[in-house]
Image (cartoon, rainbow, N blue to C red; front, side):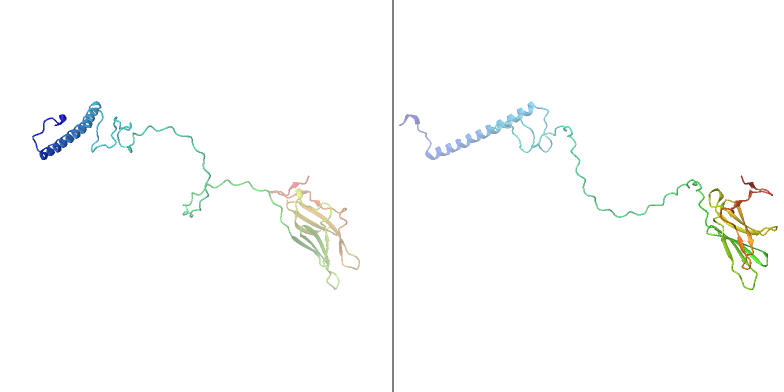
Amino acid sequence: MSPEFGARSPLGPLARDRFTKAATVASLALVLATGLAAPAAAAARDMSAHPHATTPLGGDKCKPTHHKSRAGQPMGHGDCKGPTGPRGPRGPKGATGATGPQGATGPTGPMGMPGTPGATGATGATGATGAAGPCSAIDSYHPQGNVEYRSVLTGGRYYAGIRDLTGSQANPMLWTDLSGHDGYPAGGDAGLPCGAAVSEHPTSSDVQFDVLTTTGRVYEISCAFDPNGGDPAILDCGTPTDNDWVEMNRRPAPNAVNGGTIVP
């Protein structure tokens, strides 16, 4: 009989087998109870050491823990996030981007209400007097039944006319242009010719022609009657240099009575 077995058990083989299994189950239960109790006790100690930590209602799977796993990392869930940190300083402003293409023109909006009429502007200054338009005039004189005189102003030129009414045939009207004689008014202070008249001196055979200008001045010139022998009578008005137009010694004046403005 081997010394390490000691005394033989009075139980039979079947009883011993059952006893061995029961002992194994009891040992396993003791190990599990010890393993479960250790973490629970450690958790209880951790909670008692941190009384300010509370567990939210419903549980918090991201509750922090100071225990480390066997790998040396804090125990907990790897996808949990910590509290948000303070906002960092604002970074520098980036460069302005390129201007985008212009968009399509939108539809025309409705017409707005009419605005209030503006105030009437000040009356502008009177403009300068423009140039006088062309004047035309005619006059005639019949001193006797055998001759006729006419004066015509047209296109700025002055014409003296005579027609001999003697004889059996009708003679033509003969014209002499007096515009080229010295002193004929042609603008400036004298004004432009705008009226014409003709008359005969009662004490001589001279015929007098007058012109009125746009500035109210009156100029005159005389021509002599020439019977011209057996041909129709004519006017002798001399040459442009020896028979001048002369302004009358007084000019018409407003409100004048037997007076007028003396010609200087």
